[in-house]
Length: 241
Ligand SMILES: [Zn+2]
Image 1 (cartoon, rainbow, N blue to C red):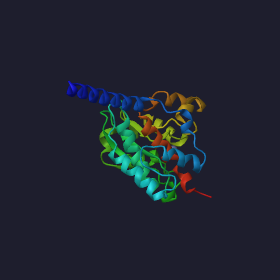
Image 2 (image 1 turned 135 degrees about the horizontal axis):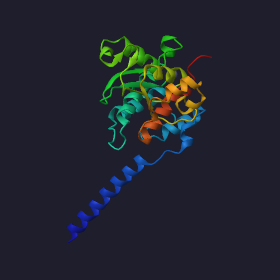
Image 3 (image 1 turned 60 degrees about the vertical axis):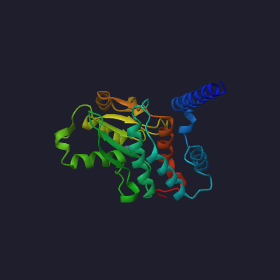
Image 4 (image 1 turned 90 degrees about the horizontal axis):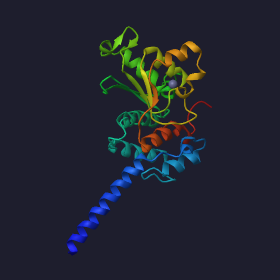
């Protein structure tokens, strides 16, 4: 009898913690999380992640802890774009570790396969145009594999540029020009152009509206990490003075 009680207790415990995990994963992040203006705000949010980061960790240690977490992260099935978010965040982190801005991007073909990955390298290469998406598209278009996926300078239907952060006006226009769809991970209200399609000149807006432009189906933890990597320049105030 005692044994039966124990088994029942364990079943309840396990199922409760499982449903808690699912609930935590699917709960929406408070929109205020995605506005970060100071180093203190950034550190507080980094400490709140389940990565073991402490407020007095040196930048190198913070990045190491994020890296360990990201590489071990198993994208849950209910967040269908987390596999792309993880890959884009790993790219973003590579840039941050190099002293650059934390934005990464992957190119996904019509079957859902990642066929190219890149990160921002404006600081590293002293080039104003080297946003993650620009490097992604340039590298892809210069590669031999692109022949299979392109018609002159236009991509075949169903391809997606997936970014850790919402693409800026420059990148968004180029994504539209090549005919790809746009998806991104973090919903920062100050981040990009996709949510401001109606601000584009009419013909550019019409071109943008021919494609899917949307926030990905990403978990709260991937959204948070994308945002914090994007604003990680606040850690050491990197960039032009
Ligand atoms: Zn850009």
